[in-house]
Structures are given as C-alpha cells and as structure tokens.
Image (cartoon, rainbow, N blue to C red; front, side, top):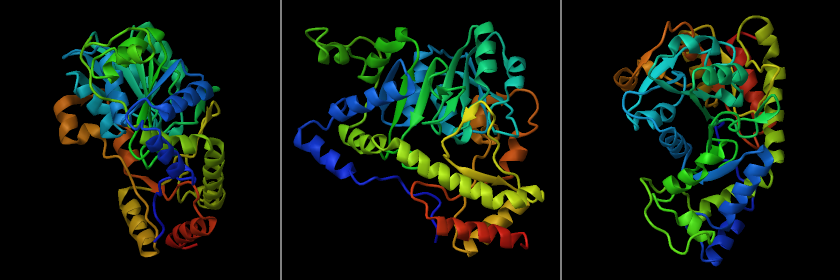
Length: 376
C-alpha cells in the first residue's frame, strides 16, 4: 500500500535528541529551541518567532493576543481545519465564515468587506496547500477597517507571497510542525509575531503567565506571575527533532517540489482533456509543495476514484468538511453571504500521496491508477 503521508526524517534527529538529554535540558526553551527560533527569524525575516506545542496552540496564542472578547467577530474561511476556528471560539468570539476562491481554495478577498460588521475585530486567513491568499488586498481591507490579521500558515512553511514568507505578512502568523507537515517535530508549531509590541505579552502568555523569559535573560532578578497564560512551549526534545530538518530545509523543499512537478507533468494530459482540474499557483506565489490535489467532476466521481485508487494499493484522502456545516460551526458561527464554492469545491478535491522521499516509482503507480480510472 502506498502511504498518503510519511513523517519527514533526515537521520540526525536521534543524535540531536540525545544531545539534549546529555545536556540535562529537555524542558522548554533549551538550546535547540533557541536555534530553531534564530533560524526561523533569519530565514523568513520574522520579527520574532516562538515555538509552541502545536499549530493549534500558536493559533490560540494569536487569538488571545488579539484581545478578543465575547461578542467580537472573526472572519475566516469555512474550508479549513477545526483548529483555525476553535482558537477563536475559546475567546468567546463569534465566527463569520466567508466563501473561498475556486482556484486556490483560499478565502475570497472580494467577499470580505460584505462580511464586516461593527463587531468585527479580526480577519483570519488560511494559506491552503502552502499557496498564499491575496494578502495585499486583505491587508488593505483590514487597515481600512482597523482590523487585525492572523495568518494560519500551518501548511505554508517555506512558501512566499511577493517575496515575503507566509506568516510574516499579517499581525500574527501560525506554523504547524505536525508529522503531516513538510517539517516536523511530531507535535509542534510556532507563533510569528510581526509587531514588537506583542513580544513581551506573548512571552508571558506562553510561560504560564509569568515573566520567566525575562528572568532567564537576566533582565529581572526573579520572576513572578504577571497575567493569564498557559504552558505553550514544547520540550527541547521536540525542538531537537525539528532542528535536524531545518538544517536541511532546502533539500526537503526541493525534493517535495520535484515530486509535485512529476505529478503535474504526468497528469496534465488528463487536465487538458477536461477530466480533472489541477492546482492553481498565482503568479505572486511561490509554494512549498505541501500537497498535490486534483479535482474531480463531483462528489460521486471523487468517491469512485478514491475506491479505485485503494483497490490499486494507493491511499488518497480528502478534506475538509466545511466548518459552517458542522455541528460546532452552526453553534459558534454563521456563513456570510452565499456558499457558492466552499461546499461544491470541497466535494471535488482529492489529495494524492505526497511526502519527503516519495519514490517516483510509487508516483507512477498513482498516476497509472488515475489514468486507468478514466480509461486511459
């Protein structure tokens, strides 16, 4: 069976984790965490980056730092993972779902202003498949209405929009280093802070509401409880695992891009015949080959192809069930305007196996199975 995903490993993870153990520093903010922070900040031109226990906890931190209160509204796409929404629900905010663009599956920037009310405080975008939303337009709308912008860039590490790293464009950016992502620490993530005024509040929030980070830097002689917070910092063992992959980030990225291109080249004839649709990468975007998907005619055809692939030993997956149609989505939010594309496009999309080290021979099997489904 050809796996849908395999967690990335490069071979030095255990060596680095052993070093952390031997240094008797396996709790949060050890040497490897600091190396990851420095690498991410330098590579992406980020003002400040803090590793977190997950992409979800990075989103939770961003939501709390936005100062949301019960009754405030947050605009976000319905076509996203539950974490994007749950982070804001925890603050008591109301979710306002907006439609997506059918080309990139991202939030449709032309639907934003109609969704804004006097209660709107935040726009949360999700860069689907590591392909950027139309950020210039979204930022212009946000600034015009005095709104904060949170980037859910869980899938966007190493992707750019007009030369800027995803996650560094809005007020806050959130990365995921889950095992399904391009770079992994098992469970983990990172918060990108693009306004220095939030640096200290973020550190306090991340360190159980204390100013322990300032104490560790020697800026105060003792640390104390300052505000509310939680324990959002991961073990240095996780950071050591991640560091091994960041050291070889370009190699991983190039390997995935090559696999993505092999799919594109092999499946283009079917797209030209109108049998399937392939991903769209706008001119201003550089993607990271986080996933390769195809779109079928409808839900029935997708279901049939998924079963056909499985019979040929290929695991293919789909997501997401639009959040506004889920029980929690109906409880915590509402859809602004008309659902023209969110549900329709979500039912057409099928993700193919994609991971670092994917064997080209396995890709040939995937492509051959898809071709046979269409009688090629």
